[in-house]
Length: 105
Image (cartoon, rainbow, N blue to C red):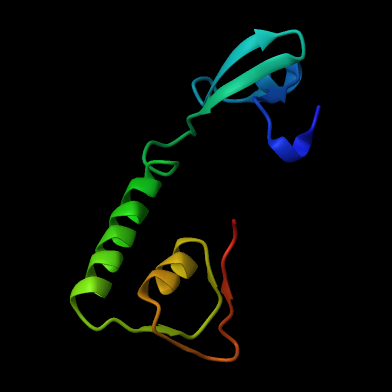
C-alpha cells in the first residue's frame, strides 16, 4: 500500500522460512507466505535483549547530566546508542575524524 507508513509484517517465501533454523522466528502461514511476528535468533542474549542494557546506560547518562558535570570525547565514528549517549550528555569534544551519526526524527 504505502511503504512510507511502515509495514504490518515481514514476509518470507516457503523455501526461505524452511531454510531457517527451528525456533529462530515465530511466523504464521498466510496467503503471501509466512508473516513474521518475532525474530528470536540462534543464541539467547544477543538480540533485542541488548536494548535493555542500552536503555539503562542512557538512563544513567541522563541522570548524570542533571547531577554532575558530564563531558563526552568522540575520537571516532559514533553511531546508534553511542551517538545517542553523546547527545544526552550535550557537552562534547569532537575530533574532525569523529562524526556523530544520529538517526530518526
